[in-house]
Length: 228
Ligand code: SAH
View 1 (spheres, rainbow, N blue to C red):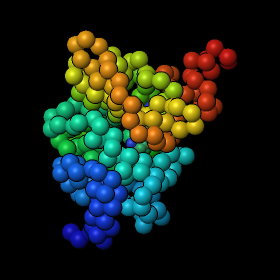
View 2: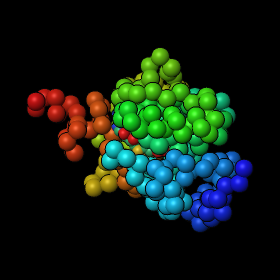
View 3: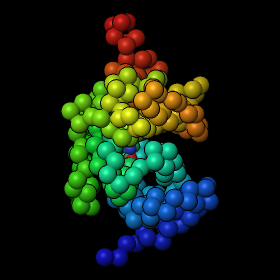
View 4: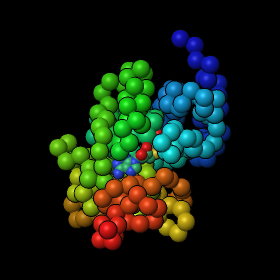
């Protein structure tokens, strides 16, 4: 089947990923293959390959392609890895992970977005992705431990349940608030404990729920509970 966006997608891979130093061939192949436009609302499909985040409804966004690539790269995904994603959003990041051979578990808190993402993933035959509704800051206990945990929303701190659900030698990737934006952190677990590395500055929509932000911007959930 011909894809009218194939050329734009190749251009995105060249100018937004390769030129910024991403050379992992499996990753580039996944970005060349997954039809990002199909994860956007119909009226926004023409901007699917531009260099930024795009709205997907409910006040949420699909991350900038470079940011999706950077998070995936930082997690060092290998075939067969069990990956937990917090913040399904459009489902695009899940599809990229599935293309890399990961076994994907993803959690979204907004029912409308979850339904849309499930539908898109079904249409594209990503049948093995497990997606469910819930507060992802609590993790997915029944399926733990995970080799990789990706948090695709900005957090005030690392949710403790997610550290518990990370396998030994596992990687957790999370944008943590620092000043007016976020910084991408990679946390590695070894038999001795956790080791944290600071990465690039970035901007994400907030991670909302217990162990994240309250519904009012800049109020932590725990604080909100104490106040109310
Ligand atoms: N990975 C997505 C981008 C998601 S944007 C993609 O590829 O399109 C972040 C998403 O996190 C939003 O959809 C938001 O609703 C969701 N989110 C925020 N807090 C959450 C929580 N505690 N649990 C699950 N999802 C959450």
